[in-house]
Length: 603
Image (cartoon, rainbow, N blue to C red; front, side, top):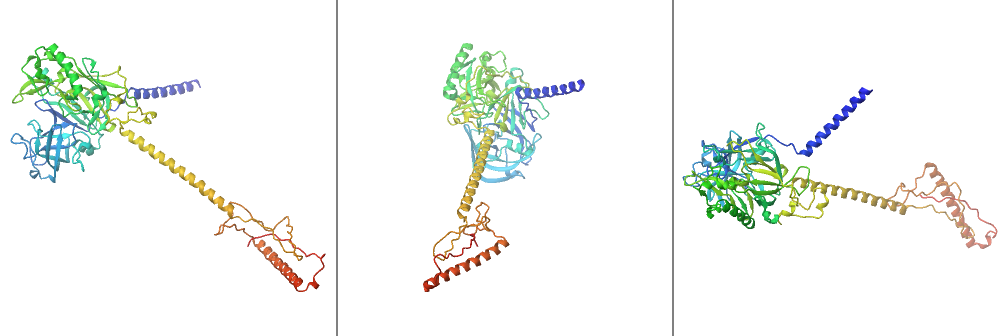
């Protein structure tokens, strides 16, 4: 018995330990790493301004692949047409030259930040060793304004379909085609290692500077492309990848601006933009601090280099191949984002991305043949915050559209050999509610929502909120239907009972006129033959009256009684008539008529 008891106790302890382990793993964080279904190489353009993927388009026998900008700030795919962009465009698409091309007749125009392209949509196959072959719709560029550069041949959009054209029938982007082809998870990762960052350690390097993963955050064989942990920020709006910026700082100090100024009208993460753009008040506050620190470090720094459109070339302090250049000793920029955790509805968590000077004074190749190494400040003034490559370089960004969040982590195992100097940290001292950072067009507050587990007045509606709202609506409708059924049932029952009671007829005593013209009520037998009954179960005739069911024997008694009643009535009539016609023959006053007692009945 002791052995059995010990074994039983040991089994219970093992079960408790297993449960504790599961709970600990759940609290420690989600283990949701997943192998990607597609992995495409990201190549930097020679100027260092953007990342591209390479695919073959059509079946014309074109040997050179199309270099397409991987852009999380747009949602359409487009390639250079044969009649576009002059002699400098060496890789173009001609629908007539492709036997698999299906043209469309509608003219369309797409607008990007500061650029415009126009042309016609066609359908044809895209292929590569990485994706196989996919048939899709895309725009053939016939005309453009400030879009084309010789370093790329088109663009592929990675943002939500809400931004896609044409508006009446938006086309699926290349990313969505890949998701549909293999039914992958709706998520992709961008490992962006920094195109020109290798110049700090080598003058001979590959432009293969990262990976685009579709369907997971690991390589096809489970390769890790980032350093744990990955920190998540919620996607506030699903068009661009809109996030909530809760603070911006420099040299370890906040700019001191209200966080709503960082999100007016919104802040987006955009791989198709080289710089970080800030609204005027944020830009001016940040640049004042950068200028002060730069002038203190490099007194003879040319002020014109504080303009992002002006490259600093030929100066020792700007040399991107010199690890000891003076600019690299400047303080870091800090961008703080709203933080979300699985299983938590807290809106007072934040984390910070540290951007060292080698990223915000970004390296690039410039000059007439883009062969001169330079640096240019990657801070620009704009109408909203755009977190471009200056923030994304050196990071792995996991766009988890399925769970409405973006994860950021420090990149590792970079194909160009770069070791990232970016840092991520939880802002433990910052505990204010990042819901208050939303601009008016993003903020939807409700006092009712604060009473729910997920509610804090921050009603940005992630996908699961639609499920909750729909469930509540269904429950309310069901309760309403059940309540109506219950109420109508009681109402019908009350009506039926009232109708039954109102239609019942009680038995009435029969009064037989006596021969002396005096009315008397006959005495009833204690055991009556018939009795009118009131009951809810009593059958009703078409007029609503009760019908007493009579047995066969009762009918016989009724006939006899009826005959007796008619005889009695007949005698009474004759007597009355006789008394009227011949009073002399009337009976004596003391002679009483004979009464027969009868029961009332219904025929």
